[in-house]
Length: 249
Ligand code: NDP
Ligand code: 8X3
Image (cartoon, rainbow, N blue to C red):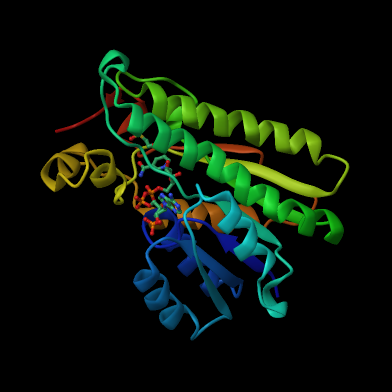
């Protein structure tokens, strides 16, 4: 049986991926800051697979290494890493950008992804196998108005995805990215700092992707035969053509 570590498992895409993996019989290490949510998810998914939870902020590099390096014996072999934790903070012209928001996006979406990955690399290298899925975004393929630093953070994920694939080429470790378009999760609530009305309006007038749609694709990616590596996937709702073209009623 395989084991997957999923960051950002308490909500949205990460949570749906945890459920999809449990249905696939993949054991789980679920990460996020909200412990109550992790506990609830563990209770639910333990009916199907072995589940361990790790609560940490991906920005705190010492804690990231300490938690991942002290996993119980049964969870020490990690076959799949889903680098999913991340969010947008704010949506403003760059000249009006909030520096704390910039720090949050770069520290979580880029540096946090690197810390978690770096903690897991030695395990995969010594195993001689592993599969890393980086959750990028359409925002990492095309900059949109006011997206500036969020887009930059996701362009960085795109670069790191390519870099990991090159640098692990001789190690037998698969690396690929899934880049979603508009997906209805808590993403916009976080971006708009709890303004639920504004968040809801992002997904009004068209059928956005559901987190389960992306989870199903991630499940497909990780269940391909070993010689097949899905390197980079862009997935949008049918109503979306690019970051600025959305067919709304
Ligand atoms: P959600 O807000 O629903 O989920 C974000 C997850 O990230 C939560 O589980 C949250 O857990 C975790 N997280 C956030 N900050 C931290 C932190 N500092 N330390 C640890 N965990 C953290 O959003 P989504 O599910 O939509 O987002 C998941 C990924 O998908 C992100 O990388 C996002 O950029 C990407 N994405 C989303 C799209 C969308 O339209 N929704 C489209 C394209 C990409 P907790 O708060 O418990 O720590
Ligand atoms: C999330 C997609 O377009 O809301 O990465 O930035 S978007």
